[in-house]
Amino acid sequence: MPVQRADARRNYARILAVAEEEVAAHGADASLEQIARTAGVGSATVRRHFPSRSALLQAVFRERIENLCARARDLADAADSRAALLEWLAALTAYAASARGLAAVLTQETAGDSDAAHVDACSAKLTGSVDPLLRRAVRDGAVAPGVTVADLVMLVTGIALATEHHADPASEANRLLALTVAGVSPER
Amino acid sequence: MPVQRADARRNYARILAVAEEEVAAHGADASLEQIARTAGVGSATVRRHFPSRSALLQAVFRERIENLCARARDLADAADSRAALLEWLAALTAYAASARGLAAVLTQETAGDSDAAHVDACSAKLTGSVDPLLRRAVRDGAVAPGVTVADLVMLVTGIALATEHHADPASEANRLLALTVAGVSPER
DNA sequence: TTGCTAACTGGCGGGGTCCTCCGTATCTTA
DNA sequence: TAAGATACGGAGGACCCCGCCAGTTAGCAA
Image (cartoon, rainbow over all chains, first blue to last red; front, side, top):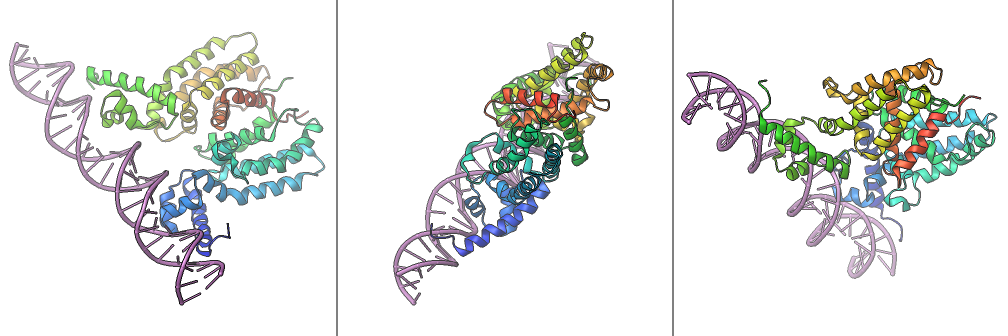
């Protein structure tokens, strides 16, 4: 691949910018057609750059995911491993609850769907960055062994999905996260 | 309304039966058009009996919901209130994970959506039946006060939604439920 | 039994989306 | 600047949801 053509790069950027707004406004099932129209390109061009809907969503949320990864790395050597993990979970929850569609991407991803072959899969990055955080928490006895990053991500995205239609998603998601962390009915 | 006409009742039943299969096969966003075709009625007839998609889903899952309610009532005076609640949660999880679409209905419902005016809203029934169970668990100190049935339902439906695309939804949902019950990182 | 009437029905058309194909415009490189 | 590779976008097919409307039918009354 002898580098991408200049106009292709331009269009890619345009589409991505429009898609961000559109997804923010209409959630994960925003109209690709509408995005193409607003971006002033043909619908085929959108499909060319983003073969599937989830590919587009992935690109849209890439930056946010990166932020979360960076956050995880920052927290990796905090004094209190449990607090660090919880803080990160809160951040993830806030993102997932506010950015409609992020949860949808992560569920498909985490579930190991069709185009998981996509190199820079969001969840893969997340897993890589958060794993140290989780490992420390497990080592310190704050989290039961056997719990994986994927588990945590699924729980949070589940919460985000379930609260999506709620009146106040963010605060409800927080409530549920707290409940999940503390346990609905822990032994003893 | 001088009672429903006989043919209307017949069609209602036909549509419902077909819808059950179709939803089981294609999840919550099965094609209404397809349902109409298979049932041998016009698409308008489907719409007439079930004004919204969620109305149809509600009807489809009404029976299952009733089962869950009955289960809750049976468990209401079990010896161990905690075990009873957990057993019920497991049942709910199993239902939500196996019946694609049930989770979707419950999330919309629990979130207090548009047509919540619908008299026999699924979640309303659930709440009514399960509340005693939860109250006892709270009284016995197994569950923190302030936790509502809606919270529990949202958690479980969230888990179901998040695991929907997973390879083995049922077992994964179970894992996550156990984790949620025990707490990801309970204090002490 | 025989109308009558209101409830019920099904098809049609409009608007929208997704997806694919293919002739054409544009960029890159020599 | 000319040739070739690359990307573009519109047309068209398939599907779906939705509202409307004229025809049909079930159930009530005489």
